[in-house]
Length: 212
Length: 187
Image 1 (cartoon, chains in turn yellow, orange):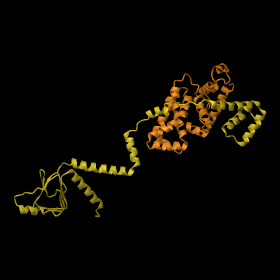
Image 2 (image 1 turned 90 degrees about the vertical axis):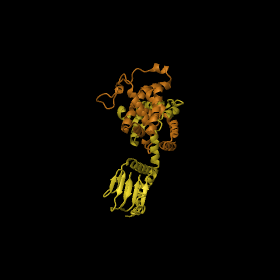
Image 3 (image 1 turned 120 degrees about the horizontal axis):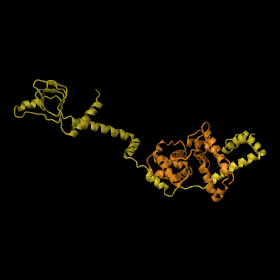
């Protein structure tokens, strides 16, 4: 056996603990007859012992404290993100409400223009929508940001948002009362933000739960 | 112990800052020693060991709990020490592989049995001398010798820490042992 190659290779395998049984007996046989290799293996083993005997170092006393001081402070959004991860259902609910309310609020605040749901056959003057005499509005009527005067008829619900129903009192009282009766459905006036929101929520649920 | 550490890591992942301090306390001596042996001085060792723990904390979510935590931590520390060693301005590149050879560097080109440093031995404490010999090994051998004999990792674990094939680990540990044998045989 070649001392420098094979035997050396086996010695290192032996030290790494992955020598096969057959190889081990080969090595043993060789060592018995080769003083040089015996010495070599002895030196290797002694080297390992020397390395292992070297003193253990200890970290400075305030090491852990210094590390803890240097840890990055958690950013707030990280905290929130983690909270969201831990509570997915609440998160979904929060997002739902956030979208819903911002949607409603922006709709309420931005639409300051006069809006009428079905303006056919209606007269619009400045800020007033007039249902002329003899005209019948089919379906619901929604007027936003304007007043409404009904001389004709509405075949459905009337909703007034940010506006009033104008009745010309004093002219022909009884006739007017009859005219208001020209609404064949509910008459609703909405002029405050919460009512507006409430109205939208009601609509939403009606939309969700209506069987039609 | 691994179980307790596992538990602590789960707490840290949930955001428990304080649980990390226990992890630091448990590993600080080992990691500090590892950095010290790699870098050869207290100041840099403390600096890099701290950095290793901070990185571990920041990246704790990328730690795979099925693996051994110490392996992961040592990997961070070892990479940091290697980076630091690279940034130092070397006067010469004994570490650099000689062109056209597989894994041979300038160290292997140096006369192995040069003048015996016997005078030196007398002047130095044995411990100090051994340390010096380890410190003079090229980093790629030094790290493996330390991980194997001072920190008791298996060859497989060393291959994971250093991210090199196990065959390379074996080759390097053989060379490292031989190099140290030559230096320490006369002690």
